[in-house]
Image 1: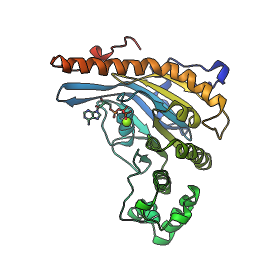
Image 2 (image 1 turned 30 degrees about the horizontal axis):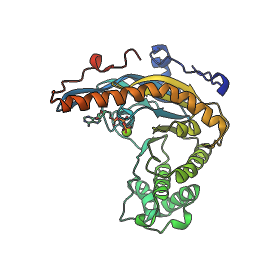
Image 3 (image 1 turned 135 degrees about the vertical axis):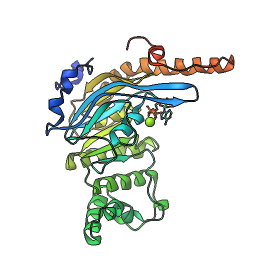
Length: 313
Ligand SMILES: Nc1ncnc2c1ncn2[C@@H]1O[C@H](COP(=O)(O)OP(=O)(O)OP(=O)(O)O)[C@@H](O)[C@H]1O
Ligand SMILES: [Mg+2]
């Protein structure tokens, strides 16, 4: 499991249902930051029950950078929300930093696609916000905020208002705000997906540098395989309907990585081949659903056994 491989013999490890990997004794291991055990989740909707996640098992070591990649709707955000404690699993358990996750906690800070900054506060006050809630003195929180604004290269914008920032700058403030809380773990749900390619490229370097400096554990969701290869130690590919962990890839490339490196492109191509089957499934499912609507046929409850339209992933 812990084997890492080079690009010539990149392997996808069909696994993850191996319960021994997730033995309870490992849950409290100091090296293990996150342990997701047998997590399943459904939602009730007007059309019945939607089975979103099935028996998700994964573990992340302290200081690891892990990406989740999968087609739209496969349950990446749902899984992230369960880890964050914002959503409850129907079954299974999540352990973070040696404690069972029941609620949101300051040890797991989420960074969303939209920076979600407070528009009535300037940049530095946004970064200080969580520290103020924690009761940190004004002088100390200013020092901490400045330290992290420096890390994301926004010191000179400390007094700017949120509306004066570009999208990329807003995300950098969100990262500084998250880091200022000194969490054990950053949970990043497509944080760069709304940004242009050039800004994204810059932020890939910045995030890698921040990660190398802080050694925070990072769980990062993306659709973008090249982004995942550029950032991650390991990549999990989720299948869809319901979301399951299909494959795991180790990325053994030196850092900092550049999206445009040939080696990053080679890894990405191999992973894309794995993901394509899942994307095809989503497209087929959506086209089938459209024809159901066109024919005025009422779609019925989506149950696990009926949704595996690709068969046996
Ligand atoms: N609160 C909810 N109520 C009902 N269904 C939900 C709810 N939240 C998510 N879903 C459904 O669960 C499935 C997974 O959603 P989720 O947002 O986790 O997917 P995702 O992989 O993050 O997709 P994307 O890549 O588009 O962000 C979708 O079918 C979605 O419609
Ligand atoms: Mg999502």
